[in-house]
Image 1 (cartoon, protein in one colour):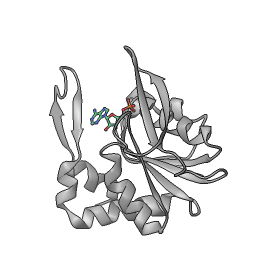
Image 2 (image 1 turned 45 degrees about the horizontal axis):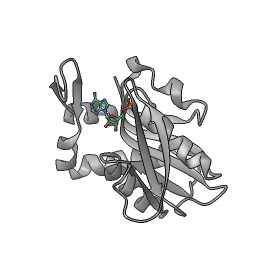
Image 3 (image 1 turned 90 degrees about the vertical axis):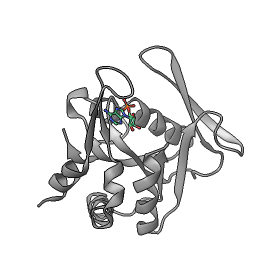
Image 4 (image 1 turned 180 degrees about the horizontal axis):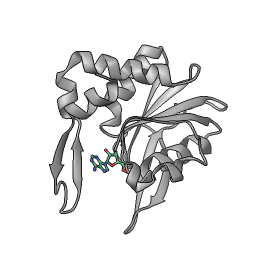
Length: 175
Ligand code: AMP
């Protein structure tokens, strides 16, 4: 079986979570399968062109494969978290949600000017979060060379929000 089929057979669909009308793609069963975890990490390694300077992982499920990928490539892993969660000095970016706004942060000085970074999260939905992470990276004089996701929900057109940052958008399993 191909990687996409293997991923899809390990994803659990949870209807109406966290609110009515949402079909939540639960990736936690993947972490019970070491072979699949290795295949996913290798799948990302072979889809990324060249060697980036760092992987930026988005809270919280983006930390899981984001860190494995960075470690496999032998490059730094940088955490993006919701405002107020990181202990040291931070740099933040505020972005609009359907109702209201949200803020994400990373530690000051973790990204260097002119770095090429890959932004990673578990799932691409509307693209709002990954696009905000890309803006936070670019504010610091670095470039986004790719986005990687385990799952992409194509019907939400999240790629449209990311394309201005990088057109290298990798989703290993597409719905
Ligand atoms: P978005 O900013 O709309 O692309 O949302 C992406 C973030 O929300 C990711 O961190 C996902 O973990 C989470 N997310 C959004 N929709 C879903 C879904 N249907 N199933 C699982 N996670 C989701």
